Amino acid sequence: MGISMAVARTWVERWERQQQRYAVDREERFTVITDVVEYATSGRPRPLLLDLGCGPGSLAARLADRLPDAEVVAADMDPVLLELGRTHHANAARYVDTVIGAEGWTDALGLRRPLDAAVSSTALHYLPEPVLRDTYRGIAALLRPGGVLVNGDHFPPAEGPCSDLTAHVGRRRAGRTGGHAHEDWREWWSAAARDPELADLFTERARRLAAHAAGSGGQDLAADRHAELLRSAGFRHVTPVWQFGDSAVLVAVKGR
Image 1 (tube, helix red, strand yellow):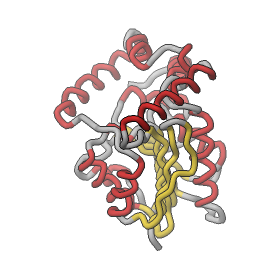
Image 2: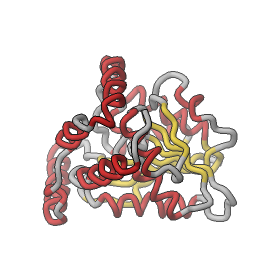
Image 3: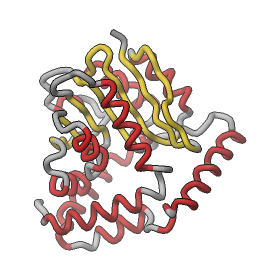
């Protein structure tokens, strides 16, 4: 199912643009995540990093640029996005096809030493709470003592009025920065599905989506609830380090 570099570049560049509609100050969020990883792995000769829900390698590529000595493992279940990443950001990471949260998903990662950091951006919110809890436990088991999980996502406040307010602030910010000028998620997928080079990958994607549809259905949990799940999973310290509207970067540090 290999694809050409030209096709990969086209669709990854369009992916980058359309994602600006959804992650408020997306580039700054990526930068903050990378800042945390750089700090947490300072002095370690070859840090091992895991990108959860890597998509086409957007965050993995930024980590590799900032931390060229790091080993990055990038995990996702979407065959289209994985192939785009493998082709366009081939040198950024080792890409792994696995369903995050499924039974035995960490075995597929092929890790031979503890992780120094795990990261994610706008990916874990789709997991139902029981699966998210188990996923956090699985990540904690992979991390070395003092290792970090850095999650950039939308964490709406539990209170309705506050949630409406943070969402409004995020929408206004996106409007000012031009994020809504780009095609949206559905438009991107619809256009990519018409590319003949991606046809076989889309056939496989449809098969997988059908197989996993019964287990889908995440929910937007507040940051406080994420913190509770993280602490119960073995992360001693949990704190937000950046926020704009309900877009935030939450950092959890495993106990030593």
